[in-house]
Amino acid sequence: MRTAILSPSLPSALSLLRRSRHALALLLLLASAAATAATATFSVGFDTDDNPLTGCILTVGSRSMPGVEVALDTVVTTTANAGTVGSVTRRS
Figure 1: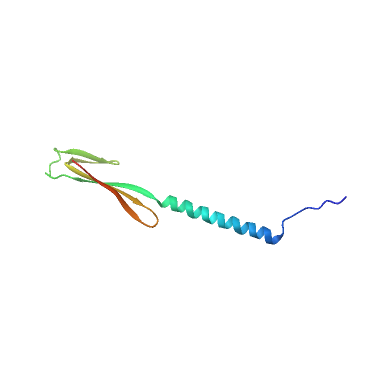
Figure 2 (figure 1 turned 90 degrees about the horizontal axis):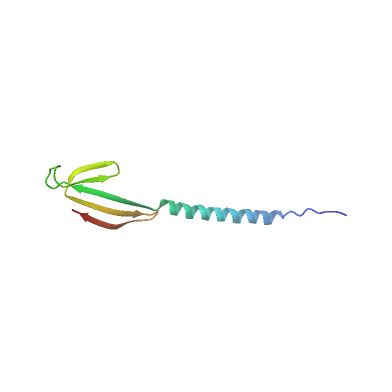
């Protein structure tokens, strides 16, 4: 009794490799598009009377600014193709 070992033909193996490469490229493209989308909030404080003893303390990250009477918060969302301002909020 003879046993035959079946192996895929060379053209079908190359076709499978080509499809796998295309699927991987698509996956990487989608992952990079998702990775480049980001949302950031920018805060600007205004000390309108130039007195650090009046107003509030604006804290952003590890930095603080005393004497803030008015603060503007701007939310910006960026993607690989565009950037948009989501909102601008005034605090006093």
